Length: 140
Length: 337
Image (cartoon, rainbow over all chains, first blue to last red; front, side, top):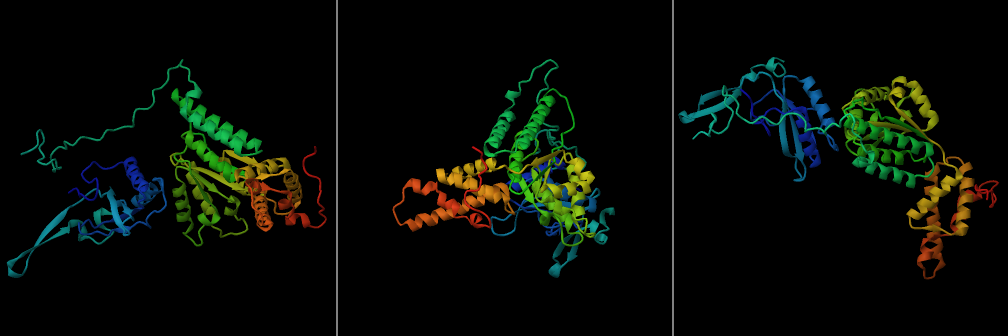
């Protein structure tokens, strides 16, 4: 199952040049860029692990790409995303967020049903990948 | 109703169905058409050449002296112009390296030339932005293990696509300290300087004697720096020219007496310790302005425009340089005419 996550998720996967162009667009808008990774693809998992601190005061994407590549090298089988923050609302607001790496095999989700009070059905979604402990998923 | 000619009801990708989405256009935009073997190329039609000519003219007008530096800057400009012309004919060659070292005393215009150099390299398309990111040892070297690499990489990221200007670069290397992290900075810089795609130009700047030791200790670094520019100390006449430019730039002027007095001041000042060329001239002029302001306020009379812009003899002779030991007013000024 191909996970759809964030901006551009219905497009073909971005090449490094396209990623650089998107990052440049974010930097031109004065959005600091941050790199995050995770191996828990659950849709409710909003806060991923941060790869270092957000990259402030840049005006060219080279530095961001170098960090992305470092993150990919360290976590070759994790999801990696780039998030651009817009601070003009005086809060940390995500202006743009897109995946730059995904695992090769994505096993997808199981729909679990439970019987609630009054015979109500309660549904939950569980990723097959999370059967294994963190860091050992996706064959990593 | 399914869309015409598509198995996907709402154009959503379905497993097992061939993807009918248009593929993004591949490849680079068409390159400029190559010129034929017998074509002639007029360099004056190169648009970049125009910007470069402007930068070079500004360099000549704003910087006094530094003849060898100006010659070298022109050579670099010419090299890059010819490189562009060669590419038009499809003659590929490796990208010329542009890392430089600027050695010279304090106040000899190293930073100014670096700014101009960035503009010129940008005009010729060698770097992506005409920006100089100035760093010193503190911005590169960490205070504990594992702190240096992120700091250096951050500086490189900020300078990416432009010029990284390392001031007082010789401080990076401290042979007397075994556990100094400066060596790590140099290693990371070497990697970046080798990187073709980074299009980052690194300029090392510092005082001549210490820079010589710095480069002799790092043979790998010295060989990767293509251009070693030496900034000579200014002569008295050149300093006077710089003073004229600065004064005119601030909308002041020296009157006759002040002119002679300032030449005298420079002659005395140059023999004193901690003389730092143009920067000392700038400071001297600032203090002349202080004394002029005090004089005008104490005069207690209506002021004309010419009062406000004229620096007089008294403003110069008020300097503490003239009441040093064995200095009598009237020491030989630098011009012999």
